[in-house]
Image (cartoon, rainbow over all chains, first blue to last red; front, side, top):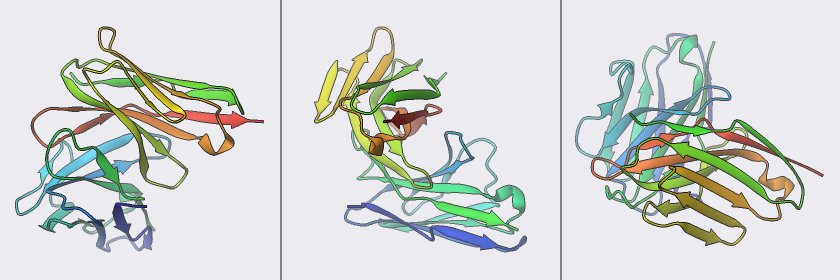
Amino acid sequence: GAVVSQHPSWVICKSGTSVKIECRSLDFQATTMFWYRQFPKQSLMLMATSNEGSKATYEQGVEKDKFLINHASLTLSTLTVTSAHPEDSSFYICSASRGDLSNQPQHFGDGTRLSIL
Amino acid sequence: GEDVEQSLFLSVREGDSSVINCTYTDSSSTYLYWYKQEPGAGLQLLTYIFSNMDMKQDQRLTVLLNKKDKHLSLRIADTQTGDSAIYFCAESFSGGYNKLIFGAGTRLAVHP
């Protein structure tokens, strides 16, 4: 069964709205979670690495103030798209690893399709 | 730098074997992964291999790794229509936070 739950699966909202996406590890503690963005027919682009209890590490070109990440517990990370605009429409996927060891594979959520009107 | 390349499309007949190929440039990778993505869904981990292994088999899936040539392949035996999806290879590196570098994905189409 799923080990990473992502919610909501689909969001449609007006331009200017802020949208929060949740990522939960269901049966393990995830020190580190990752947020990706995927454009149609393209690969995943890593946006940021979310570390429990500390600030997220953002990839080059990703606006920190636009994409707010909070990793308040070992099982929950949230991504908030602030003041969303149509160009923010995309498929957002989170993943989590069991601990922060390099031999633990990432398990992915089912993704959130965000559509900004 | 880090770069992972895959062919974009593969078409096979149901019942045949599928072989999806991947090349990477950074030899310091520790693990290499194969993920499957169905339309509108997240990524499902299929299998992964440690970089000092040559082969790993898991039911219908066989992963071959040629570290000298930096070449990874995924063979799916007896391919079924349910195997139609996009397959991503990815590599990770020691240290840090297990950051993954993905290929562009190979779209596998299985026809009767």
